[in-house]
Length: 504
Image (cartoon, rainbow, N blue to C red; front, side, top):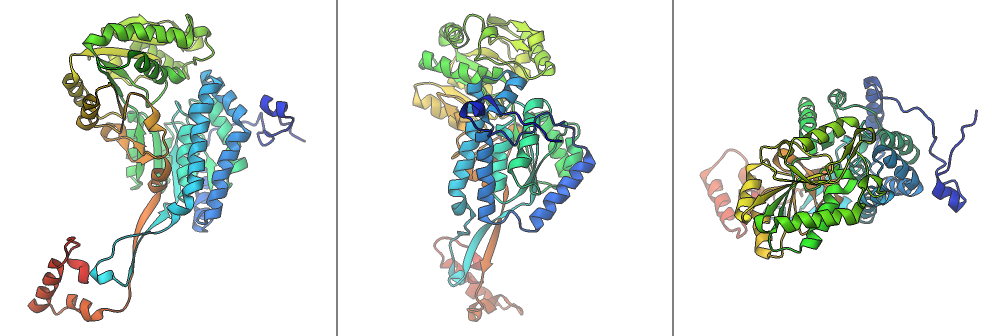
C-alpha cells in the first residue's frame, strides 16, 4: 500500500515536493529501554567500525543537517507553531538559522580542527614530534530542552558530528510536535547506524544514561541536571550541563533608555518568555525606575499592540504545567505595572512587568519560564554587584550603561557563565564564543570549535626517536649523585622553566 506524502505550502508554491521524506501520520511512540539498548549497540558497532572517522563522512552528515533544515523549514515552523504558537519569524531566526550557522561554520573549519596540534619542543624532544590529537569520544547522548527544542538538540549534534562521534538525541517530551518531527526527519537525512532519536521522558533518562555513553550533553533546569549528573556519575560518564537560573540585568542611570528597553523586552518576551538565557529580573538604579517602567509600557504596546493576545508576534506557554507554575509566581509576587492578564484555556499570559518586588517574593526564588519581568531597585552599582554575588552563579549577567567603568566592574566583579553589555542573548548564540554555565548554572561549554572540543578527547602524543641515549641514560638505575647533579644542572639552563624532564 502506497503512503501519501503531503508537501508543505512553500514547496507547493515552488512547484516541487521537497518535503517528500516526511511521512505524515506515522505514529511516534515512546522509546522503551530495550529499544534504547539496541540503538546504543548499533551506534557502538558503527563507531568501532570507524564509520565516523573520515572527514568526508563528517562533512556529508553536516551538509545533510543543513539540507534537512532548508527542505523542511515549513515543517519546523508548523511544529513549533503547534507547540508554542511560535511566530514564523522567531522560529527561523532563533532556531533554524542558528543551527545552520553552526553547521556551515563547522563545515568551513573542520579540516583545521581535525589536524594534530603541534606543541613546543624542549631539549630532549628536539628531534621528536609532540602532538595533541583530537579523538572522538564514541557514542554520546544529547538531551535537548523544551524551550529551544530544535536549537538545543541540533547545535550540540553539529559538534558531535564534527568531532566524529555517533549520537543519540533525546528531544523534550514537552514539545510533542517538534519532537515527532525530529524523530521522523533525522533517519531520512543522517546515517541510520550512527545517529538515532529516542523518545523518553525525564523520568526515564537516568535509566537510559546508565546504559553507559561516552558523554552526556544536557540542557535544562538545575533539578533535572542534578539527576542527569548523578546517573552519569554511576558509570563515570562525563557530562556537559547547560542549566538555567536567575539571570540578572543591571540598568544604570546612565543608559539609553529607549534602546535598553527594546533590547530587554525583546529578550524577555521572546518565545513568550520561555528561555534559559533571557534576563530573569532587572536591578534598576532608583533614579531611572519610573522612566524605565513607562518606556517598557510603551515598548510592549509597540511590539504587541494594545491586546497582545491578538498579536501574531506573541506565542503561548508550552503546556498547562508550566502555565500554572508561571501564573502562580506572577500572582504571588510584587505589583503588576504592565500586563498581568492570563487565559488558561489558551495557555496565555500577557507580557507582564512587576514592580515593588521583594527579594523574598516567589518570582525571585524560582526560575521564570514565562513572560514576566520583575524590577527591583538599587542605589548604585556596588549594591547591584553585591546583590548578584549573593545569589548562585547565573548562566548570564547583563548590564546596560554608557559608562565603561560600570560595565567593566560588573564584568569583572561578578561570576557567570557569560556576560553581555548593552544587549541580551547574543553572547549565547555566537559560534566564535564558548557558551556554558559555571557553578549552579552548569559545567562545560559549546558552540563552534568549543563544541568540537567538548565532544573530543585531546590525546597527547610523543613520537620519539631512539637517538640521544647518551643523554637519557642518566635516568636509569643504579642512581648516582653525579647523574642527579647533571640533570639538575641541565634543568637550570632552561629560561622557560620547562621542567626537569627536558633531558629525559
